[in-house]
Length: 79
Image (cartoon, rainbow, N blue to C red; front, side, top):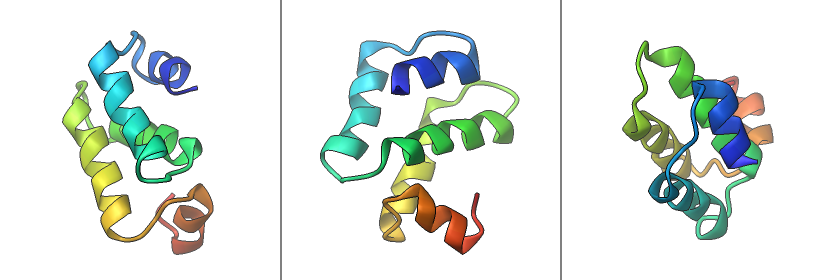
């Protein structure tokens, strides 16, 4: 899902490092895959150019705030 969402949002495939880094948020931190896709969508809307670090920054911020599920983003009005 991450790979396909990245291609849909940014128009090109992510590299293996990027896939691994994004998967760490799901596998190691317990984030919903939907939340990772949401961060990619937000990053795509926030910048006129591709900035992978922006995706990671958004995910790091969610984690720091204890947000692990897309439902939490919706509840907090951050969606």
